[in-house]
Length: 171
Image 1 (tube, rainbow, N blue to C red):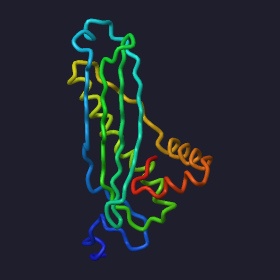
Image 2 (image 1 turned 120 degrees about the vertical axis):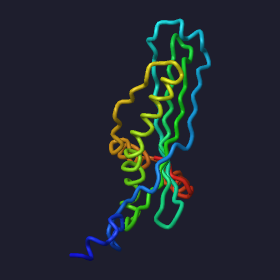
Image 3 (image 1 turned 30 degrees about the vertical axis):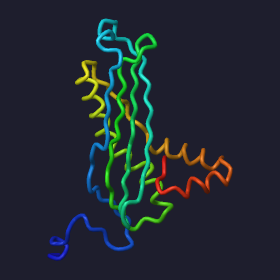
């Protein structure tokens, strides 16, 4: 019983699946308000477009960097009020995972961990830019990952082979 209490809590036994968040960080951020100050004189009823991407790369034996990129564009009367581009990243140690297990971890689970951080950064940047905060709705990364895999399965095999040859994978 004493041995269990003294053992480090974030160490995964060999051959057992485990994930440890080593670091979460803002890799890149950009805010642009190309039509300020004129945009502040108009009634605020924007059209907001959101684009979400994620990618991962192996950076060590069992270590992966996952980057969640979110681009938010707010337009008023066809003019860009603001554009926010965030890359929220994390370094994850993933032990004991087969490739079949690893793909959904870096393609769905890790982005879902990063999303609240990106969401907060986007809200903060919009407020610091003089606009109302952008409140992103929750994202079902599991469904997005499954949709991505279904689209990949429909692609010709030669395209899928080329995509697998890249050092970075996009989901």
